[in-house]
Amino acid sequence: MAHEYCFFLHDESARILVEYERAEAHVVKFKFRNKAEAKKFNEHAAKEDAITAMRAGGYEAEARRVILNKITMAMVSDCMHHIYEALRCLEKRKVVVALNLLRKPLTDSLLYLSWMLGDEDEFYHAFTTNSPRGITSSILKGKRGEILGKALAKTEAADVLTAEFIDKTLFDQANPSGFQKLFQHAVHLVTVQRVELQTTPENFNFIFKNYTDDDLYELVYYALPHALLYVSHVIVGLFEQIAPPEAAGKRAFQVRSILGLYLVEGDENEAHAVERLAGLAEVVLCPDCNTALKITPHNAGRLVLTQSFLCAACRRVQPFPFSWMFESE
View (tube, rainbow, N blue to C red):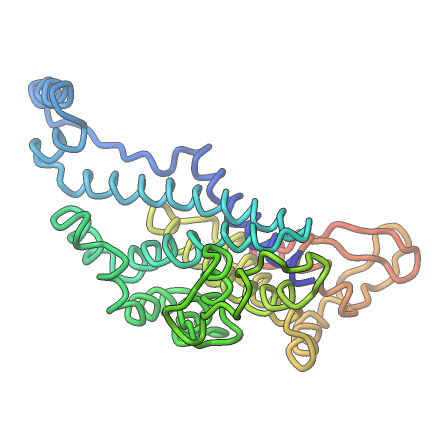
């Protein structure tokens, strides 16, 4: 189920991106005070660019929103392309290729997205006054924990994740359950700088790895669901800064994404997710045979990831739009 959950998080993030693009929610609109100002703006924009013209005309706040919106849309799109291709590679057991594709969105783009969500003022100031030297990965390394912590605090994922866990999972080279060793070995044939990352003697990293081995696959799916949960919630937070989302849909995503993680983790957390959904059995009937919904781990997964359920009596799959439950909130 871990793979399906990761694709669910990708698909929801991509869906939001497409919806905002289609609605042109990221487009900043404003009215000029008079015709002379409009003429001056057009002349300035023709000589330089629209952002410079907006600033020259006194529209600094609007120019800021244009910049932040454009960065968000472009960077989220780039992340989704990389993550999608990585998940497709994992389906084909091309784990090393998948790791190469995951490295950029999870360890590079994600820090900038988190920075924008956690402290928009600081990011904008650094981007517009000290770029590129003031926003390099080496600069961000010293404040990584702060960036992740501030961003996480603005999401519902803070109920199930910690900034320390995210940091160690994505960036700690000594964490045997994290991504750093996998990323380094996927990118480099030989690694010698740190003991934790060293290539074994008479070997090249992953070159002789049997694609049928499950160990890499299991390592990836131990950490990836948690990482993508954080990514998706950061993305939702950033889009909310562009324009308020539909409330029921947002709440449905928050609940589905967190319950989905519980189901992936299994054991007590799976039981907790099933218990949280148990109340639906009292109100949801199969429209074909009128049998009450039975909440099994399988049906819990269907409800959360595909907004459907399998009737225990007639065995038909029925739709169940999750956002309906939050329409009256």
